[in-house]
Length: 92
Image (tube, rainbow, N blue to C red):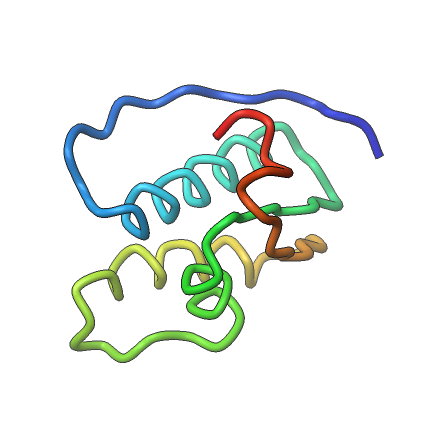
């Protein structure tokens, strides 16, 4: 595939997993609005990849955002989630 588009977002001060999840959420929003049918989602946080693949307990403080992301992941498209090391993430 090829690079389609990107975005920048100021979310203020927060934890690294929260920042990653906001990036995932807005990335999925952007891809869905662009009518992408196949998405390769690269995340440099192993814990966020785990949350996206296996879920999270409802009492976890990040559960609301993981559920929002799962709402996008369950739509009629193909999203493949990959962990990439931070060094491979050119924009991090």
